[in-house]
Length: 313
Image (tube, rainbow, N blue to C red; front, side):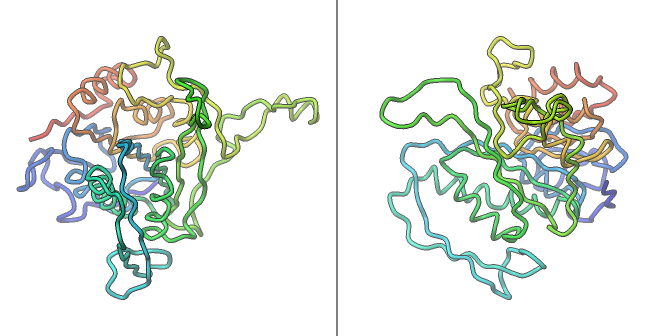
């Protein structure tokens, strides 16, 4: 687990004092309590120290506008490039012509890019980023993350497949999300396969009885239903993700005591899973409804002494 010391100018070193630019007032310490911070996530994470988190999970809003822009990107090495990739090499992304663009698409990527750049800085040397998107944007995110992290840092594309909801008749129903997995350093990332809950073989008769009884390590296709509208997990938050899929990430890419981070926290699923598995967490969101739900959910899961609540200034 990283225990990076405070970095002046990167986050609020004075406990309880908000930065001059405004935002959430908080004081993160490696040996401090879990934090749920209300505020603009880019302002908040800019004040967290380098290399503090073993795992970052991000589930940003999907860009679901019907009219979407497609902009050609060309990434080249450049001594003056502001993106750092594999082995510290600098890259510059040249944006090409845009066709049929809409403000929703342009704003989406202009907003997401600096937040992904910060994710690389915040990851520990052996840390892992899980970026959760759908089919509309995942391919553009792959190009961007290759530029930010370096192509060799790409570990997996996980397909979360489910079977619920409307079924269009004029195309194959889209019933999956994509989760891009990138590591900070492809030579030393942490991955604990034996810690992951195993699943039944689809054809148990084809393997020895002892293997069938033990189950198999999940592949990169995860079949799991969405959060049930009447189930125990349901919080009422529209984009809530099942604890089971987040649990696999936390089990594989962190150890007890490690810090985890989600700055599109929503209903706080990462925090609930991290608390249950003995990990620590920082959650950030600016939505008052998300904060209300996380307060109720995480206080019930971990107790008031375990969660540090910081409201925006």
